[in-house]
Image (tube, rainbow, N blue to C red; front, top):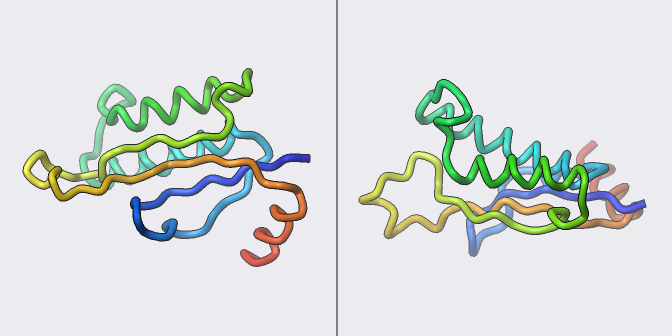
Length: 115
């Protein structure tokens, strides 16, 4: 059985936090969307989904599409850093949100390391 890992990282650096393993790509994309929403809420406190960034929209789109199709399974979404202003954007490396396939044996190894 194929599992999927989800990661967030700054280009040029190692991924932030733990790499999480999911049963479907849709679950992985949904987790990434929730993580991005939480980061934005910490900065801006938006009232609803319409106030979230285009990055959240792209992650939600992939989560919804991945549930019924292999088209949006593995891949990456590049977004800006939450809270980055227009003046700071020339220095912003952004964030890469990614989902990739992983074998059952590799998934078990990652899960064992996290316990």
